[in-house]
Image (cartoon, rainbow, N blue to C red; front, side, top):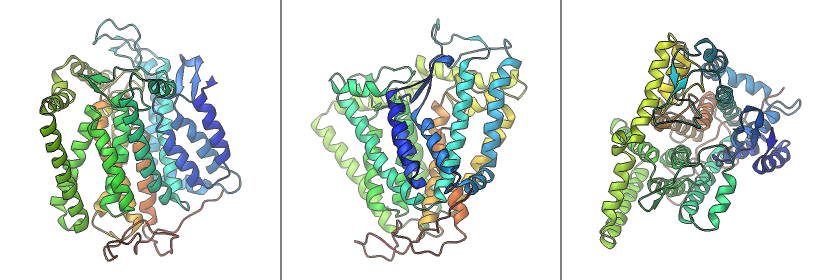
Length: 490
């Protein structure tokens, strides 16, 4: 085991923040997720497997939570209870990762997570325990810890502000780094980004017919897009509910624009699904939206159409190039060799489910291309039921869309719950793993924490994130209130 330079920087920053309020470490955790292609620690004993920065940052978050004095152990216990189904999901997945590959070894052939000498796109090997099973167990545990960290942070002073303000800055950084990386390919700047992509991940070709695909600090465009989709949705939802609307709205537009030109099928599916959800919500709950937000949404849509028309008039061939690129990354995927390979990977989940008698063959045993078939094949009936129950527990706050619009806690809670649920859609067509990801876990834990805070709201916050409908148009604040901060003790 050895630290990379990214890990050493994190070690210094994390150590300096240990005696600061938990909100500081929450921001540290959020921004560690930007380095999706980096390795903080390399485990040489496990085939040079990488511990990503976001999971390494969890070490400092939980050291702060578990401090003997001034920690938040009581809130951690509360978080375990609130996220109990996710706890069961994780524990079963970790147990299956160690036991299942040994129980069902040799009973079926699979496409492994790491394949260095594949003879074809559909090559397989007999099932056997590998280092990837341990890596998958670590990722599952990391997702659970992120959910618990998000829960505890939201229940402490300044947690809501840290999440909302941090999301705005993070959206800008993610968009800007992605655009800079795309437009500087072939220049010395590319070497700077390559320096941060020091994880043991496959670095894929990031261009298509002259379009430089946006990958930023991630090893591939789909990973960059999958991370960005979550923060795009969260900023959109905060803007929709007038939570720091001027900043969250601009951040959503900037990140959404970067996602649109990313040439990633994951980005197009994510944006498309969110737009359908947005429109369906307007039709089902027409009174739940504030008129000013609807006007702004219409103006933004018309502005986008105008810019597209100007671009097509200036460059007539652009329409054909862009449409060809989008079709290639979405509709044509199914008939391409890549699409057929992804379908083959996804179908492995059904085969593994049947061979294992519904128990699953263990996380990390095969590569999938869908979160749901990965859970089905690796964790079987228990994994499907516990994860589905957990998602249902998160969806419950979404039913409060039209309620308490003037309260920041309810607004941020619903934004977190909506984000956690919608980000599962791109994961359903692109995730190779059975863990739902750190973004899902963070927003899920935060939504459950904020829901618990709703019964008691009467406080005077230092400032208000939520803008009241009764406030004048130029007001920066309003009458929304934040729930009282809660502090745990060991």
